[in-house]
Length: 318
Image (cartoon, rainbow, N blue to C red):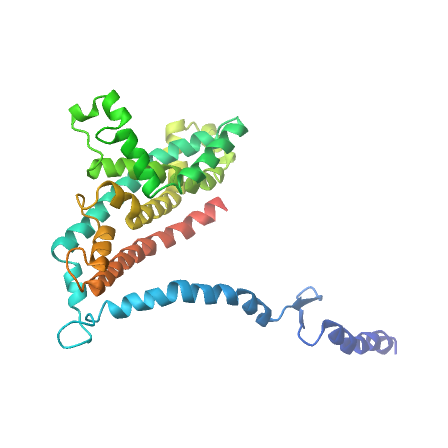
């Protein structure tokens, strides 16, 4: 009888508890005997629906147009519009292949130098005792990382051009310096790639725990051994991620290179612009889309190599 009286109220309370949960909310029992409310999944999908629509319109439609038109002939071509692989084949031969290889070399070189220069600078900022200096450097890096295009080109032309202030003051022209060359363009790119690397690697440096350094020192490790055997292996995925980001930023840059070197340095972005505008040959719009598809493929391969390393780094730094 006692058991019946004790269990009856809990049984009767069941329907009222379900009713209190609402028609769209379910109660899920847990091993501890309590219940948790589950929110309907439809609300979560509705929240991200605007983002999905935005991505589909801004990225999906242009990507679809690139993929489809890269494999079609131009409207004025003999025989009309039809499917073909001629655009892709043309994009990896001759001057287009030279420009593609030039962009890869420029992007890889400047990204590697940006990583080598940005890491010690970011480490100096993270370990600085002056908070105002750290905030000033990070704020300046945020501005410089987004400073490019024609204004940046004009600043370098006025400073390091053939008649620039530093060029004349230091007589750089007598030593073979030229801003309008592969080397000069690399220096210009580093102006915004190094600050970008500082912003990218600073969170990873902040994730290095002081206990790891103390444990290494207690075991007799020097500062060099700590960086070689502890810090750098942990930071390697983040460094590679920074390299990928810098590579992509340099690989896609157009306005700065167009304003400084024009056609003197072969780059894939300049070739795409020439093909679209018809500066060299008319009716090369679909070839330009094929060149864009080549860029997408290269960026996709680089990202595919980066993502597994980033997941491995997250296990240590988070």
